[in-house]
Image (cartoon, rainbow, N blue to C red; front, top):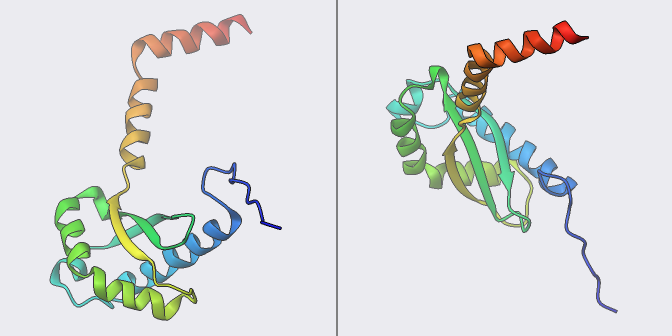
Length: 137
């Protein structure tokens, strides 16, 4: 009798995807914070790893990174891509999976989006609406 798998309704994927994502995130963050990659660009930047998303088959990890202060993002991404093979080997050594996932690096733009929303909330039109609503209650 064949097994039928239901697709996960959660935004981050299944529980297994979320657990593996967090384990890979910790591994990458540790490697970068301990200076495990001998690259002058990466050694000269503090890089945060706010999120990792795994594909359903756990063979692809999309790693979202942000250099401290949001500067030099393209340079940092290029350095990470250049050291992808080493990082994949380190992740494979630290995370117990059947296959080492391919790594894909992306800039985490959530901070920019949060700033854009914050600016929108401070516009006079929105402030007027907010004050109008609070006067009615």
